[in-house]
Amino acid sequence: MGAQDFVVKPWNNERFMASIHAALAAPRAVSSPVPPADLNLERSEKELIKEALNRHQFNISQAAKDLGVTRAALYRRMEKHGL
Image (cartoon, rainbow, N blue to C red; front, side, top):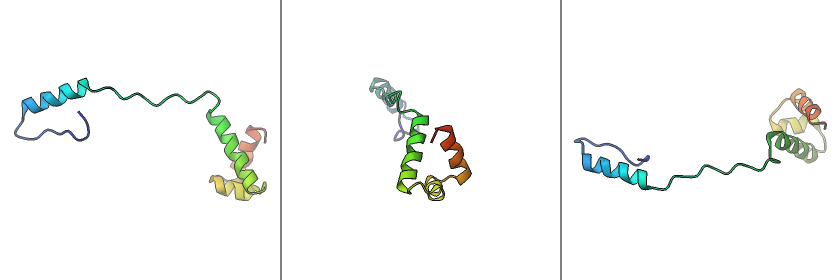
């Protein structure tokens, strides 16, 4: 059963059972593929910081504003990533 299915009154047992059988017979959705190991959160964060710094000619205030963090938070993350 999906979002479009609902139970109406009076109850129609045949329609309900047909919906259940159709749902069981339908192919199951495959979960999204696992991203490659090199696309982890740490690398993504480091790349975003580097891009923002380059975009703003290493102006920390502007890069922090662009990233939506404080200057202090940007400095901490830069230190964490060796930037």
